Image (tube, rainbow, N blue to C red; front, side, top):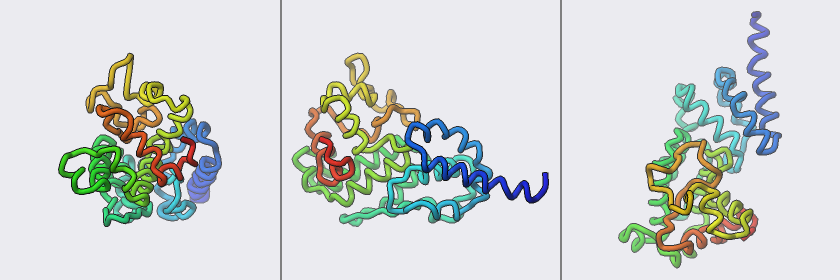
Length: 239
């Protein structure tokens, strides 16, 4: 193989990634294995590959490529900025670097627990003290922070996890929570999925499987989060 032929490989990979970006969700999912097989050339493309993506956007291709590199070429992250590549924003002085890193590393169970702690913090000191959130506290949560959390879950899940995704699935089942639970894997054969051992903490989980919201006190907490104006903005007010 000539040097010129070798040089053409990363360019062909970039063309494939551009095709990937331009595809719909179904076609993208079908291309995942093919794209991951190109990890050596993805690594050779280096940081310039990410110049085509928006750090403030919802493009999960960038998040997934970072996950592929973290798993297969961890040396790429010697440039530490890629551990927190997406911009995050907070009205509460919350640093979302830890959540972003957990999601890149696909430590979804840890990321879910951390998300719960952020929700308690956004709800206020009383929620932090008691260890859980009342639905009545959701309306006062920072919209900027909720959107940051929602966006991180979206971009690091091939566009399949997040509150806004859960809202879209709820809409698809006629806004009936009893139909939502089995759809997202929180209930099976009429029984609640056992936490945490029976949940699927990987990208193989059903759409909307994460992040978790405690349903022991009914649906009002989750409904309040999915209908919060900041989350509603992200799912086009479909509820």
